[in-house]
Length: 197
Image (cartoon, rainbow, N blue to C red; front, side, top):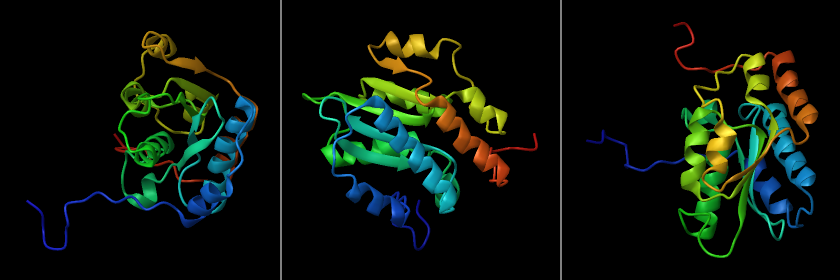
């Protein structure tokens, strides 16, 4: 039952700068490095503009290099623990193409993420329809600054590959690590649930 004032809908507000950033990206991205640097830039902008955590992601049409949707971590400003950069990018891309399945049709969609997916985002990847995942920093890099990445299978890459989802790791890793380290340096909030337990 909904309480007074609740409409029964889920609304996540994107930072205003992200909308403008998205609109400005009209050119296709012609290399995987360019796509990764875009995701890393999203993470950096999210820190600098104080609109969320140090993670950025994007969904691209791998064949054309066209940006379908960006995503940033908006867990804290949205009060929503599932609002990770990958989840935001996947949801926006699905809305943009009008389908819950990014693998339907002719498009070859790829998820580009500044840090490899946590346990939650890993679980969403096979159901999203993406066919390739490009990762910058490793989960251990996020853990090194205090984030809890959850319980992932040791061979999570093999698990995705077993579902015909290609995985590329360590793409611009040093640049992605630098964003995480910057977040730590400025004492960015580490927002793990149940922190004291």
